[in-house]
Every structure is written in C-alpha cells, then in structure tokens.
Image (cartoon, rainbow, N blue to C red; front, side):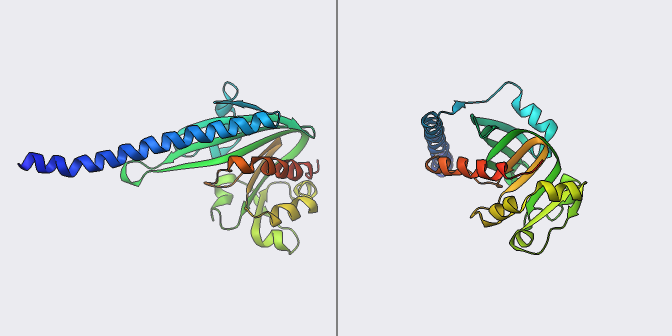
Length: 219
C-alpha cells in the first residue's frame, strides 16, 4: 500500500513534466516552420543550423556567445539588402545547474558590411551594471537627450565612435519600442534583446527595422 501511495503521488508529476516537454517540442516545431515560411516569402534562406562553424566564429568575435553552457544556435535566416549581409537566428544557452538552472533564448541579428568600424558596445542602462568589465572599454558620452538617458556606450576610440554612431542611428534606437543591445566589431554588427524572440508574424517589420538602423552607421 505504501509503494502504491508513492506511485500515485509521483505519477501525476511525471505526466505533468512529460506534458510540458511535449507541448514545448510542438510549439518549437511550429515556430521553426513559421520562420521558414516567412523567410521563403521574403526571398531569404532558412536553415536549421546555418553555415558550418558559425557558432564557433561568433564565440571568437563576441563574448556574449561564451556565456553559460549548452549553447545552441538554430533557425538561421540569411539574406542581403542595401549591401548588408544578414544572418538572423535563435540562440539558446543555459546558466547554473540543477534546481537553479535557467534557459535563455533570444533572437539575434548579425549584419556584415564593407565598413571598418571601431569596437563599440551599446547597452540599455538597466542591462548589466558591470557591462564595462564584461564587454571592455570606457564609457563614451553623448550630448543629453533620450538616447543618453536610455543607453550607455562603451569603446576605446571616443572620437571615431561618436562619428560612427550617427544622430539618426541614436534617434531610431532610442525610439524603438524594444530596447536592443548592439555590439560592433569592424564590419560586424550584432543586435539583440536579452530573452526576446521575435514573433514570426512580425519578422518582416523587424527585418526592415534592422536594415534602417545599420544603414545609418557611419564609417
């Protein structure tokens, strides 16, 4: 009777966990199918994992991809517009372990352009108080305004950074409903929002926003 009692307690918990796992798998599958469909309708390429060695290259260039464990990159959408090569993808990583573990997922966009840009990190002020230590560089101050209230900029070449981060770029970034992080390294621009994934039905507008934003950077 005691063993049966234990089984009756444990069984619903197992069924509940299994149910969550199955539902998550179904939703992930539907999301991937929706993204692939949107990409095809826009003349963009979709792949499950992207180019070979893509994640390793990102880990070399950007510290963000060295965070956590069990890192995975998937649902890669590639295209070119306004002379900008785009690779937009989902990135997942795990922090801590056991009961304290957390899984983080976000949509990330990587733009590659033919410009020699300085190393720049732009973060919302509420994002990582220790951002300077993590990303490196000194704070670059811009004139008072909405952008300066919302964002903090780090880098090692203030004069060139102020030329690169144009007034138009700052205005658009500050007025976007979502507050994004931007990391720039030579001709590569990484744009993302922590734990934010774009809805497939909003991908077209998101892609257009990204193109407008990057095209406003000065070399």
